[in-house]
Image 1 (cartoon, rainbow, N blue to C red):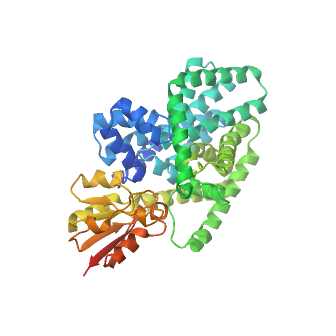
Image 2 (image 1 turned 90 degrees about the vertical axis):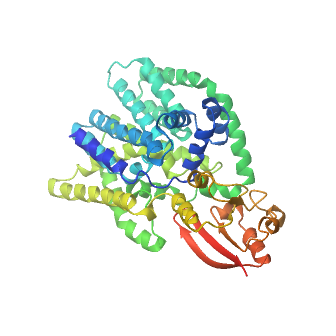
Image 3 (image 1 turned 30 degrees about the horizontal axis):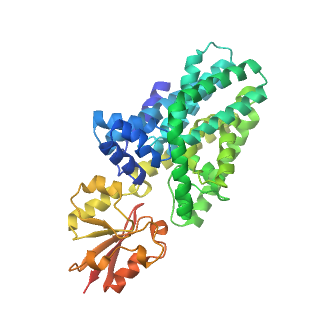
Length: 472
């Protein structure tokens, strides 16, 4: 049965795999195209606050299989599918074969995990690394012989995947302290210490990343709202997103009203799972879920790091608990709850997979629009161009950043649009991330001063508004 579940999980992760790249994917892919392998790890990675694992995989994979959206997302599809199997193994070993199968089924159709199993970024990799590591730890706890080298490299695997995944180590420590078995704590500490030493080569790059990140945070205070600043709704949003994925509604009131019964039902089932479990399974699963969320919350009060997708690696633990809760009820109610949970998960996944509005930033559609009308010049609310735009445009469109400084502070930060638009009576302004780059809309004001009038507006999913200006 597990092979059927893996087949379903793989199939769902292949649907709409060629959807448009979004901003971060575009940056990574254009870098992988242009940098050498060493340059990708020592130059590009300095400005992208993540460990080297994904960058190395992306560089090698691109050279072997090309740079199409589908090709470059296949590694994440593979990582996501293997994570389903690891969830099965953890659930089976920690609780029972039935729980392992149900947890694997729930992960195979989980909308959030599907979304990030289709993204050319490191989050599916981190989720796989954590599940492999926890599976080995469970085997050690249960008295099985596990080669120390395997433990070291599973820790190293996490260290290479994503910095936020590091929070699983404090979670493991909390669990092991509750366990009160010194020999296991010692083996765990040796394995982690050896992995940290093995990762020594990355320390200088990490320090540079910290320095650049601190500078960017100081110069772009509004950036925290994009990358993960904490507020009162972060934790409940994380809970909801684990259930429904990235789908959303423009009307937040209707969105909240629809989600309240769904969230309440899942919370009740989850709580039933917590009450049902005892001993090691309960302590491990709660540590796996709660400790990373708690650490991310505390750190985000100072440094913006907490976004729900960065803790994707807690989703398997969440779903194991949900599986336990679902099967804890009497037969008739259990079957009804099981069907409800499966239908909610599958419905939300299909809303994402089949409806473009719920998918990634539509740079592909934006560039196709411009290629069709062939404007003389396109302006961006930036000091340069965007990699995702360049990926699709391939040099066929004349596009310029309308800002000299990023972010724009006053009129002197705006490029000399008078010279740039000389003898050009029609232009388009793409306002992607304008709330960060040009919050006072200085570029739009300058265009008005130059005699341009806004003719119409188009909206491209995730990218934002594109303003059509004409000078009569």
